[in-house]
Amino acid sequence: MRIAPTLAGMATYPFVRLEEARRRLVAEGVKVIDFGKGDPNEPTDPIIRQALVDAVPERAPYPLAAGLPELRDAAARWCGRRFGVEVDPDTELVPTYGSKEAIFSLAQVLVDPASDKRVVAFGEPAYPVYERGALFAGAEVQMLPLVRGNGFMPELGALDERTAIVWVNYPHNPTGAVAPLSFYEELAELAERLDFVIASDEAYSELWFDEPPPSALQVADRSRVIVFQTLSKRSSMTGYRSGFVVAPPEVIAALKAYRPTVGTAPQEFVQRASVVAWDDERHVGETRARYAAKRDVLLPVLAAKGWEVVASDATMYLWIAVPDADELVTRLLELGVLVSPGSFFGPSGEGYVRFALVPTLAECERAAAILAEL
Ligand SMILES: Cc1ncc(COP(=O)(O)O)c(C=O)c1O
Image (cartoon, rainbow, N blue to C red; front, side, top):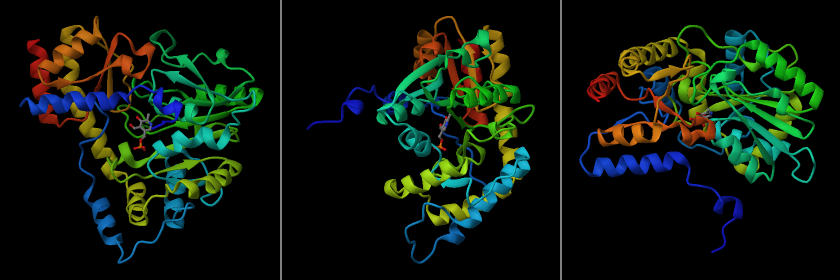
């Protein structure tokens, strides 16, 4: 069987490898505390679950790519409340099936692989989907190293006229770094000068510890800004698959033309539950408090070990500088504590490990005790 070369040439998705390691340990009877994948174990709030149940119809027709007007309105209202921006729910917003599929397909929608302007740039270490989406679209990728010395912000001087899309992701997975609004302003000015679009993946904007991070939507000139939002982390709804894109009307029109072919509109009962989720902030505050409690359990023991927690100002991740990351990951795995090596996320992730604060508080306490004994 012939497989498309882009797929055949790709390494196994790193988290598939982690999952295999976890399964092996569980089969050996080890009680694994899994700080690997960023899939929240938090319960989805009962009001959201009830809204889903109430919305399940006798017959569910194909959902339309434009989404339910109720959901578009709720998402646009939320952008207004959270970031103080006015978004037209009909022309500037489209619901998505979580955000991954929309992130993956953006280059297919916007990049002409036969033109010179076909470079998709993104910081690394990174969520792997910016790169994979670009490669499947026949675009060229440019990695911008995110290192401690530059506060995990990309060097914008590396961009040029060939740049078509610049991905940014703040609060950042895996480092937990937060970008100030001035960074987005600088990027927006450059986007105007070099004629590229800014694709801002804001999956973690609601998981913060001290103050709410800004959005790329808040720049003075939003005409080149595309923002990807999701309920996955904000509302612990990874399995529901619900997010939205805010973008200039031309981009939303292009997405509405593209998306029916792929068939990734969220189910309408999920969209109705999503309306309830975007309209409620109580459960988000509670979620933040739970992550903060877990973080507080781990920080002292990490400090006592001399492992330095770097950035980590938001998101559900702790980004930890350690002397020998690979050796540590293996040692922890033997003790039933699964963490991700930073190198999973790109070459600049060498020398770090990432803890996703997804185990329960009790498990975090158990892990802290294991770490203290190490
Ligand atoms: C940086 C980042 N962006 C986007 C996503 C996609 O999330 P979803 O498709 O569940 O919205 C994730 C998921 O882990 C992520 O870490």
